[in-house]
Length: 307
Image (cartoon, rainbow, N blue to C red; front, side):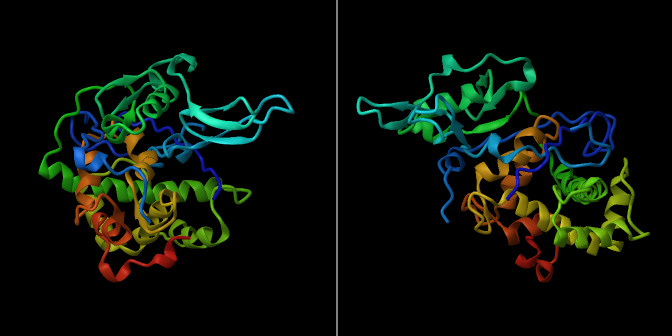
């Protein structure tokens, strides 16, 4: 599946900002010890208001594979290592992956490169984070360490019950608008495939569609009731974008990171929302749980919509 577009959202007063006077201080996973134990699954431009809920390249978060390129005869050339590891050759000139020394990582160019880990420690860059995590492999501390959110660690205020109910309203509208934006900008099928375009075209051409912008919660709730069918595909589409490592119908902590990690510093209900989506507490969010979180009816959950 193609590496898809990085949306860096300017949320000042827009998109998922709640329609209150206070700016929400976003929260990322204050992950429980049990949640952290499971890492492996079992199984630019500036965007406009109402565009994607801060989704970034999956490769930044999923123990991505990097290609080591060196001299033509170097055995490490094109030898694959997980994020946080580098290729070295042993005495027999055989390539192998070893943990990268965090001190060899390039320095951060700004705060935007900082990462907050679930140990509540700020790491200078993603390179420093994954290299550190690698050096802790096999230890209890390393097993529990995950990327929490993008940016320096900070206080994330608690998400209240009434705020939690508002969160999916804005998320649903956001997902619909990002698909419409992708449809408008897609000239060469790089953003959406043909089947996806057909689905989004129906939404795009619907005269009843609520246009992107700031809307009251009452209006968002009313639109969801009146134009319910417009929201079914966007919810399924986002699940499919995340469910890739592997594509098994379940979202792990790592698979959710491309959506959660950038969103948490801006939306303090993010962690609680995704935690409570896991209704059976098995540390995986199934498609049915995901759909229910966004208010879809059970009969409208359709794996065939994961295009």
